[in-house]
Amino acid sequence: MLAWAHHKFLWVHPFKDYNGRIGRLLNNVILLNLDFPPIELKVETKLRRKNYVKALQKADNYNYKDLKKIIKDAIYEAVGRIERIKK
Image (tube, rainbow, N blue to C red; front, top):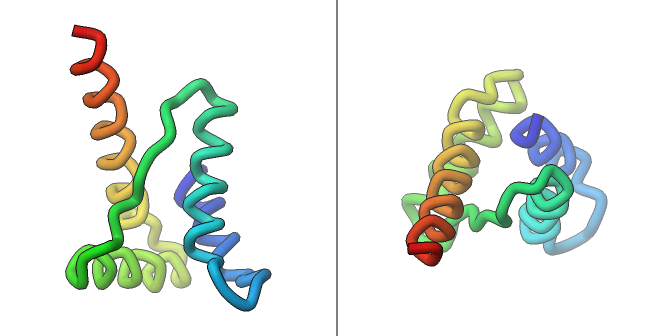
């Protein structure tokens, strides 16, 4: 569901600029409402951004596998951070 919502928001492209940032913020609003920790979709390097954009392009054809993996990995990382803090 999160990958679908993220993709659809970006697909609609409601703003002239900052759609990606707002889309990633929207992910965190959804996650926080579900009692999950906020995540960071790491797209700062050329390779990560390329993979992220490719995943979004695949989602244009209803293939959410790669986008789900990117989001799932970010969720696991966020949960791992919390677990390390609790120790």
